Image 1 (tube, rainbow, N blue to C red):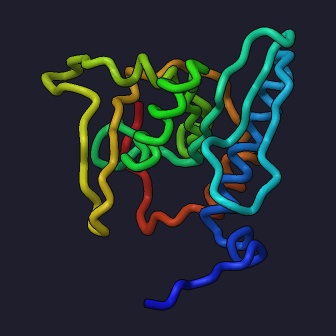
Image 2: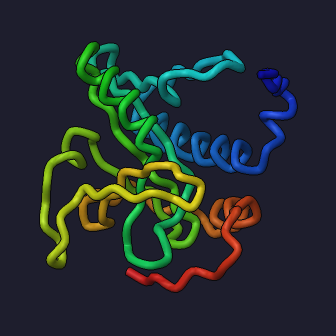
Length: 177
């Protein structure tokens, strides 16, 4: 079976990668404004997390950024289950807390929470979270309710519009919080 090679230029030009990079830049700027120093991988290869953020040379967090709005059917968001397992491995082995940031162009907001908090079972509206869902492509997702998230910051109209131009969704948003 032949392996498909994707060069870094092709990868970086993908719309989903460009949207992800924009979300990462927004969160990085926010954290730097809170006196964190952010270290990002410079490799073109797959990496374990988006960046490491350090405050006062003492407090270390792993920042994982997802540039995506809530799902349209109910106020939930999530990540690929394979990525979740990778994050849990890093958390268990190195004991560095992982914060999942979601940059939502629809709500014009950054929200998120610590992975270890998101993974605690909670009942919201007669449903138990976290939940699992399989996509049409067969990808397993871990889902969390918006109520499990902490508000981090608002994003500007300009940032939200830039993210919207890179959205792969083929429908308008209907969920309002």
